[in-house]
Length: 314
Ligand code: RIB
Ligand code: CA
Image (tube, rainbow, N blue to C red):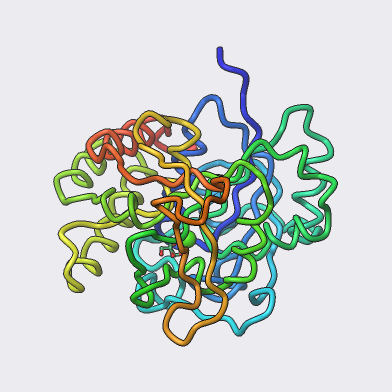
């Protein structure tokens, strides 16, 4: 049996964050050591409540720490138009069965890193505020980090502005800190997540699995599909689970090693992930950028993941 990989999940659930956590929980060789919420899709109060409800639904038994209410330096922004006023509109979810950790996200992540006998993989699927704060507060713990596999950015385009993807745009300074960290970085940006499209035939197969998690995931996908159809997408771009794929089925993604920097200024391009695809700068690549994804393999991964939950969703 593969040695289990300890992971920290950091996100702003968020329908696709929740589905990323389904993949992580379903994977037998990932060991979820902690969850940290971040402000992004909705306010920190809402994303934290959603994180607790999703962990209750999935039976994730790990400490949950409430993140910072706003980005490192700039004003917060939310995406209620996509994820709804709750941040996770759609199917009814169980009320949390756990208490929040008394620790801050930085303290929780630092504790996990110190106590783990294996280097820890960090999987941020929202703005990288907490992860940047960890790296700034505890540079000595970088040696305990296996990699950071994040959903964010896009070399070819943005989705919140023409240039910037939402997670990076919400906190460009945090993203810049991560991109400059020197750690192994795997980027699940729009270049692959907008190809990870899920269609009705996919989520009806998931619904047919018949357990509680399958029904909820199908409802999340249907909610996401309806919104994105209205704005011109063919299917639902299920962004965040792509960050987990890098750890559990890396062969489904084709990566290009690239030097990428984050634009922190600019009237039109703040938050843009500027990838030097031709290597004109001659800088050493700092990011493995996902450029292609096996969509059918990705859809099947989601289907197989929901089958691992029993009828009570645990
Ligand atoms: O741009 C997509 C990202 O923004 C996803 O992580 C989604 O959950 C939102 O946070
Ligand atoms: Ca997210």
